[in-house]
Image (cartoon, rainbow over all chains, first blue to last red; front, side, top):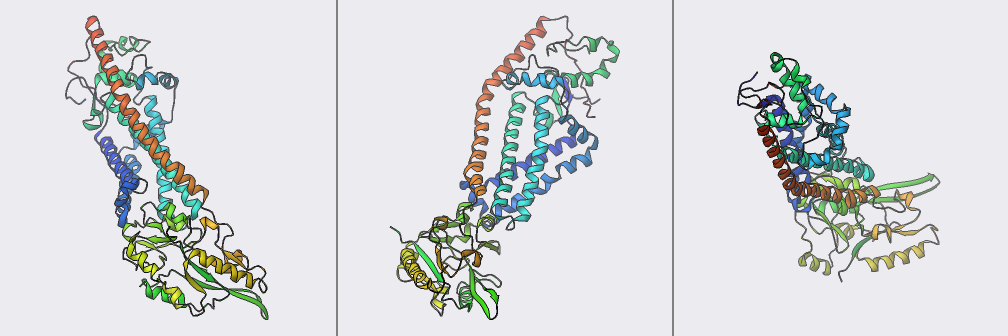
Length: 235
Length: 280
C-alpha cells in the first residue's frame, strides 16, 4: 500500500514506465530517421549516411525492449502477452461500444480488466508488427546488395507497412491517452480512481477487494449489473 | 531539345584487351579494387570448333533507370540521357545495388560507385544540369574508355547517330553472324549503351527484356505514398475528432458529478486511500 495523494490508483511500476519511454524514444527516432529515405524533403538527413547511423543506433534499445521486459518483469511480461491474446465475451461487447468510446463516452461499456479490449488489440498488433518490422529491417540491413530487385522491394514493403501499422497504432494510443487523461499512469505511475472506474472496473474492483474485506462481502455483490461507472463500491 | 547522349559498343570490334577497364580506373581515379567496367571472356564449343567473344558489364544508362527510380536521396538522376551521380547526396543505402537489372552500381567507401560518362571525378560534384558540363559535351567530351579503345569498338555521342550506325553494322555482320543484333534500342526506355551483339543476348548474360521489377513499382508507387498518406490521414482525423470527443468526455464527467451529488446514499469515493495496483 503506497500512500500518496488520495483517489489515486497505482497502474504502472517504475520498470514498466522505463520500458515504455525507452520504447517511445527509440521508436520515434527510428520513425523519423527512416522517413529520410521516404519523404524527399528529409533526404538531406540521409546524405553521408547520417540518418542510417542514427537509425542503426536506435535499433539497439528498440530490439532490446522485449528482452528488458522479460528480464526486469518476467511475470508481468508473460501476463501482458497472455492477456493481449485472450478475448472474452466482455471484450466482444466492448467492441460494440467502441464507436461511443472513441467519441468520449464510457457509459454502457462492459466492465474491463486491467487492459481493455481495445488495448488488447493494440498490444497484440504491436507485438506482431514489432516482429515483422524488426525481421524485415534486419534483412534490409544485412541483405543489401544480395536481395535482388524483387526481394528488396518485397522486404521494404513489409517494413513500410509494419511502420504504417505501428504509426497508426501510436496515433490512436496517444489519442486515447489524452482523451481520457491517462498520461499520469506512465508519468507518475498512478491514475485517478475515476479513470480506473470508468475504464477498468473489473481491475479496479480486484484491487479494491482486499481493502473492502472488512466492509462485508456485500461490496462485490453490490456491483451493478449494468456496471454504470457512477456506482462506487463500498470502501 | 537536349541531346540524348549514349555509348555504343561493337562486340565484333572488341578485342578484349581490357584497355577501357584500366583507362577508366586511372582516369576516374578509382580507389584500388573499384572498377566501372568488367570485361570477361566468353568461349563456346571446343577446339578446333569454338567461338569466343567478350562480355562487358558496365552501366547501361537506362532511359528509365530502376536505380534512379529507387534512389531515395536524388543521388542518382538522369541528365541528357546519362545516369549521373551526385556523391554528396548519397546515403549508401544500397537500394540501387538491388534494383539494377544489370547488377552494376556498388557501394564503395560509403557511397555509390558507377560510371558517370566521366562527367565528374569520384568525390567531386557532378553539377546537374550544368552549363559547363554541357559545353564540355558540346566541345567533344570523350570518356576515358572511348578515348583509349584501340579498335574503335567504343563510341560516345548522340544516341540517334550511334543507333543508326549500330544498325548499319548489324546489317553488315548478319552475313557472317545471322543472329547479330543491336541490344538496347527499346529496353527500359532505351538504353544509353547500345551494344552490337553477334549472338542472342543470353549468350552475353544479358536479359532479353529487362523490366523495372513489378514489386519495386508497387512499393514506390503504391505502398510508400499510401503509408505516408494513411499516417497523415489518421493523425489529422484523430486530431479533429479529439475536440469532439473531449467535449463528450467532459459532459460525461459532469453527469457523473451530478449523479454523485444527487445520491447521498451512495458513499463517496474512498477518501484518504490509495490503492496499490496489482501487476500480476
